[in-house]
Image (cartoon, rainbow, N blue to C red):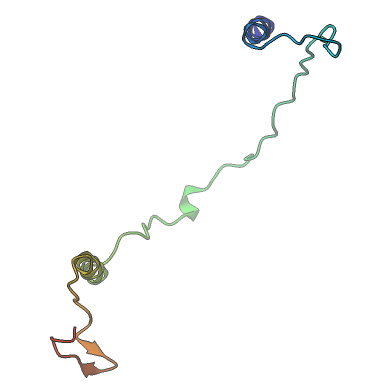
Length: 100
Protein backbone atom coordinates (compact mmCIF):
# COMPACT_ATOMS: atom_id res chain seq x y z
CA UNK A 1 0.00 0.00 0.00
CA UNK A 2 2.78 2.42 0.94
CA UNK A 3 4.63 1.65 -2.28
CA UNK A 4 1.61 2.51 -4.41
CA UNK A 5 1.14 5.79 -2.54
CA UNK A 6 4.78 6.71 -3.08
CA UNK A 7 4.56 5.84 -6.77
CA UNK A 8 1.38 7.90 -7.19
CA UNK A 9 2.90 10.92 -5.43
CA UNK A 10 6.09 10.62 -7.51
CA UNK A 11 4.06 10.52 -10.71
CA UNK A 12 1.96 13.53 -9.64
CA UNK A 13 5.05 15.54 -8.72
CA UNK A 14 6.68 14.69 -12.05
CA UNK A 15 3.64 16.16 -13.80
CA UNK A 16 3.63 19.32 -11.69
CA UNK A 17 7.35 20.15 -11.69
CA UNK A 18 9.29 21.16 -14.78
CA UNK A 19 11.78 18.72 -16.20
CA UNK A 20 15.37 19.92 -15.99
CA UNK A 21 16.98 20.73 -19.31
CA UNK A 22 20.53 21.40 -20.34
CA UNK A 23 23.91 20.10 -19.39
CA UNK A 24 23.37 19.86 -15.63
CA UNK A 25 20.27 17.78 -15.75
CA UNK A 26 19.86 14.93 -13.30
CA UNK A 27 20.27 11.56 -14.98
CA UNK A 28 18.15 8.87 -13.44
CA UNK A 29 16.56 9.29 -10.08
CA UNK A 30 17.89 6.99 -7.38
CA UNK A 31 15.32 4.55 -6.01
CA UNK A 32 13.42 5.81 -3.02
CA UNK A 33 14.44 3.91 0.10
CA UNK A 34 11.99 3.74 2.95
CA UNK A 35 13.39 2.35 6.15
CA UNK A 36 10.90 1.31 8.81
CA UNK A 37 11.28 3.13 12.10
CA UNK A 38 10.88 1.32 15.41
CA UNK A 39 7.82 2.19 17.47
CA UNK A 40 8.32 4.81 20.19
CA UNK A 41 9.04 3.53 23.68
CA UNK A 42 6.19 3.28 26.16
CA UNK A 43 6.13 6.26 28.49
CA UNK A 44 3.66 5.23 31.16
CA UNK A 45 4.14 1.73 32.43
CA UNK A 46 2.50 2.05 35.83
CA UNK A 47 -1.13 2.61 36.73
CA UNK A 48 -2.18 5.92 38.24
CA UNK A 49 -3.66 5.85 41.74
CA UNK A 50 -6.93 7.77 41.77
CA UNK A 51 -6.97 8.01 45.57
CA UNK A 52 -3.70 9.96 45.60
CA UNK A 53 -5.13 12.97 43.73
CA UNK A 54 -7.40 15.55 45.30
CA UNK A 55 -10.85 16.13 43.88
CA UNK A 56 -10.66 19.90 44.35
CA UNK A 57 -11.22 22.25 41.49
CA UNK A 58 -8.88 25.19 42.14
CA UNK A 59 -10.71 27.46 39.70
CA UNK A 60 -13.93 27.43 41.74
CA UNK A 61 -14.15 30.68 43.69
CA UNK A 62 -15.77 31.22 47.03
CA UNK A 63 -18.52 33.90 47.11
CA UNK A 64 -16.25 36.73 48.32
CA UNK A 65 -13.67 36.09 45.58
CA UNK A 66 -16.47 35.83 43.04
CA UNK A 67 -17.83 39.23 44.18
CA UNK A 68 -14.36 40.84 44.01
CA UNK A 69 -13.77 39.44 40.53
CA UNK A 70 -17.16 40.74 39.38
CA UNK A 71 -16.30 44.20 40.78
CA UNK A 72 -12.94 44.21 38.99
CA UNK A 73 -14.56 43.19 35.71
CA UNK A 74 -17.25 45.85 36.09
CA UNK A 75 -14.61 48.52 36.81
CA UNK A 76 -12.60 47.44 33.75
CA UNK A 77 -15.73 47.53 31.57
CA UNK A 78 -16.73 50.99 32.80
CA UNK A 79 -13.15 52.23 32.32
CA UNK A 80 -13.50 51.60 28.58
CA UNK A 81 -16.25 54.25 28.61
CA UNK A 82 -14.16 56.70 30.67
CA UNK A 83 -16.00 56.09 33.93
CA UNK A 84 -13.65 55.67 36.88
CA UNK A 85 -14.96 53.52 39.71
CA UNK A 86 -11.70 53.35 41.63
CA UNK A 87 -11.30 52.50 45.30
CA UNK A 88 -13.23 54.39 47.96
CA UNK A 89 -10.18 54.44 50.23
CA UNK A 90 -6.55 54.94 49.31
CA UNK A 91 -3.98 54.34 52.09
CA UNK A 92 -6.78 54.40 54.64
CA UNK A 93 -8.04 57.86 53.61
CA UNK A 94 -11.51 58.19 52.15
CA UNK A 95 -11.40 59.53 48.58
CA UNK A 96 -14.13 62.01 47.57
CA UNK A 97 -16.45 60.91 44.77
CA UNK A 98 -15.37 63.78 42.47
CA UNK A 99 -11.77 62.51 42.27
CA UNK A 100 -12.66 58.85 41.77
